[in-house]
Image (cartoon, rainbow, N blue to C red; front, side):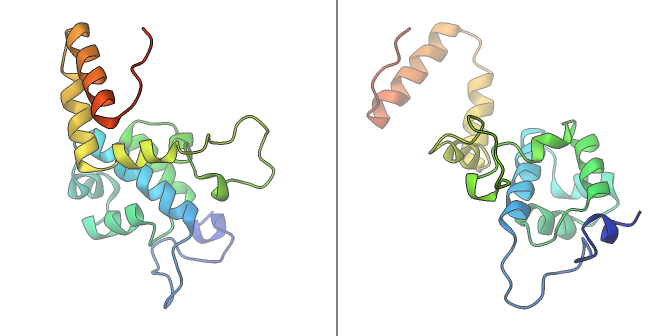
Length: 157
């Protein structure tokens, strides 16, 4: 089955969107999850492209949601990035999810900022540096300091 058949025959996965059409929000979300995982692994767009037989420009378009990722390509991405396919749909914004969502499983309001932050260069650097701190007391002190700087109440331990 071709990628065109998988996507319902509407679009070729590598064809740019026509004119002024906006990227589909789910394509943008899936692309952002590809970028997040790639960055967490410290992999460049060029290296990911090499593993998939793509140019870094094609990877870039997938990550921005400009080009839709077909089923077989998503399968390959999951394999190369070492995640289950569901990873790409995790944390999808509520408005993008299927309308027949199961009650109790919708994203909590305001949680998407965490994914956005972790997808940023600063979020990734902060997360990697924090993970290298081995002393639990130092980690707790850093969390408390950041909460204080943000004006949050300290967490009860």
